[in-house]
Image (cartoon, rainbow, N blue to C red; front, top):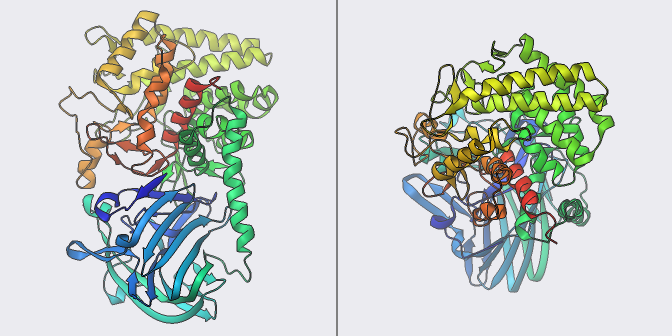
Length: 635
């Protein structure tokens, strides 16, 4: 993926992302300017995958040749000032698959490649240089040590204290919480402590948030060269006495190649760069710790149970990563409380149980795991028991405000579904919650019959039949689709009804299924997912802008959600639709916008501008799963 001569104006919102398998990451824009407070060359997970902190924001780069001095960095400061304007020397950015920058200035060519050391809070910046005459490259790290959601700002008295131990080849800086090691295999290092003040982040400005930050500059690295040369710069939260850069670089490239190869080994598909990018994007969300977890989205979401269960079929099963596909639901099962899967885990590592549906998505994920692996022994031994506990939680009560009503349908309190904002409370009997409930009961019935538990299977069958009968109340004759919520009834046309047609066990007759799909197609479908509300609704909003309260009004009242395209593809196929692969064609262009090479959290419905998180696990997972489903056997 190539971007020729990117400028700040055209590329401030095109972002690249790397992750390290621990929850840490490296991210910025394709012009090298940090436009979010979440951007940084090294964001470390101090308590993997939690406790993420910005350690190294970026490198200020200055090239000196016989023709003069050239500042290769790009930053924004107050009053809209862009300085330096290093993008003027940036001839090309490539994601191939590592982020790579190509500069030309003063008769010198510079290639800069960035990668992370998988399994460590460490990033490496690798420089390739070529100059006919004598030249010098200076690198000044901008460092910090703060949680990802905050900023280092204010007056001199508010600034954190740093101390450093300088060496000939680098430095170790001690911040308020973390240590920061920066060293090189070829450069010399000079301590020269100062501060960089008032860097402006455009995304924070647009969102009406605090948008300026100060960074500590401990010193600078210098490298003099003539002809061809190369060197590496290590950024880490731990001191390294020796780094075999050649081996580390080779290992990461081999690991990346293996991720892509494994995807094609698991699927009968032609090679496709679109699928290559999706397979690599899927890898970024998997945290390979003791239990294996899923980061819901970069750069600010952490571990979310619902998101992990929805994303699992795409990011782990479709990619052939069956060890992770075992570990992720197993970890979710072990963290259950009263049968409820964790909703999310905060940066301190504290779990929150505030989801009515995460345990139901767990049941569907286990079903899809069995479909993909045929590993009945593992499901019976490790996953079926927790599923039964989850069902008991709904039947007999749990710590979450959700329970089975007299008609067999699930009823929940406000803010407990995936649409959980203040403007979408959805208290009552949400349509997708009950479509999930029915399907989980049918899955439990299937498992019980497979594992010789006929009595339990008969019980699940009876309960499922009652749910299906009561579910018919969701039919809205006037709109020829499903109510979004019952008791109280809510006729808002939302995408949640599509799950009644997309899930394995049907709830409606064939005619009504087609009517639901047609309603969603007509009012909610876009090239990049489903709108969260019909544009015919007075609450529909086209833009995701303004302060947080304004953006919250748009979040689930207009914004397009890419992950819902997976369910629409299933429903389209289930109702006899053809050419389903064409439904995904819009995502090919999307990979060049927002988070390049990945899929965003949400999209503005009219402009199709990516907003929200630059990379979302369930977006990538569902589009990858749908891609495999609609392209399999096309070899």
